[in-house]
Image 1 (cartoon, rainbow, N blue to C red):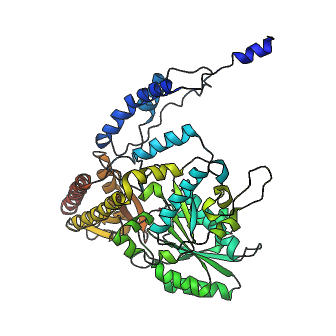
Image 2: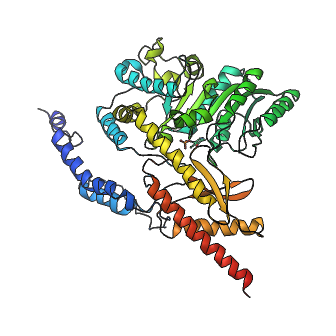
Image 3: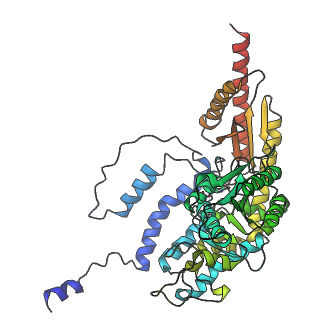
Length: 488
Ligand SMILES: *Cc1c(COP(=O)(O)O)cnc(C)c1O
């Protein structure tokens, strides 16, 4: 045998694990992951970032023992961090982290199938479309509707704007106008920009006292733009705004869209999953008339980060926006049940993210998710009633779903002073124990503290603890304020 053949005979095979090695690896992982999982309740809900020493960033030429690698990860790097896995995490809009999804990812990544082209893994591509079919039913969309899984709501909103543009505007689209509420998630503005629209083509509809887009103002904007020679083509309604969880009058928006032949997109990234509940269905009535819907299973379905979804009323619209002819890929399909995901979405190679959704839903059933979501709605209402009993607390936004906003508002303070007071208030609530993490926003210019309950591990005990922390901090701050007013 010549030297070169000999070298090939002895090629490095260390990447190729067998089942026994996998087992050993998983045991080593579980030695750390197990205690981590069991201690989530007692872990801090958040920790402030610390500016550590920058690592040397030496390129690792040789491998290290896995124990050492995992120790570095678990002991040095998991914290400091905000902890969206914690039941005390009620900030922003947290993602979930179902363990069954992690197991699904393990399976998906080891079997390593290519699902973006139907032919290359037909039963698995169909599995992903099965998930899309469940979401279609959940949102009460017609049989013609379909969609695809994205990495998140931002990507879904972007594809929605591109699809609407392709289906409703000519190639020369720069006079196309998009309308959304002043409470819109910022990903809508980014989507419009990424889809090629000048900033001025995104028009903000004023929201009303309940933070819902004003239908009156929308009609006015459309009229103004028409008069100015612009071309209105898309309205983005919200089913659960990020600030307060407000749900627009989707029925009303749908009617305006129908009348003016506009594409009606609903950003239900946060709220969509609540369609499993009766209250959610009532709040979001009209969503079934939309042309497209953004959904974030990594929020309301408690999945790990990286799982969004865009649903579109007519599958052919997704083809119109995304399909491209290629010579070097297998034959694409015509049958809608054999969708080639790469032809209806912006990605080609991607993870098999459908399994991450499919497996936990198969294992627990939608009823379990409904139970959890109903509980979150109840918890938000419970927290609101408790807040209303605390002196000097103003509930600024009662929950329409599972988000609410409030502030401390003692008499006689200017807006500036109120902002300063509430910044300290929030620091006290979050900081003293790190048992809860709340975040803030601005509502009509005023500083507002939010409670957002969508972590599946959040139950009454932690919400009660949160309210206790709020009550204590409110008493201390208003007490101190009283002293400084009556004192010298
Ligand atoms: C979270 C959210 C988004 C963005 O979704 P990502 O998954 O973070 O990209 C968009 N719209 C709304 C209403 C959201 O709540």
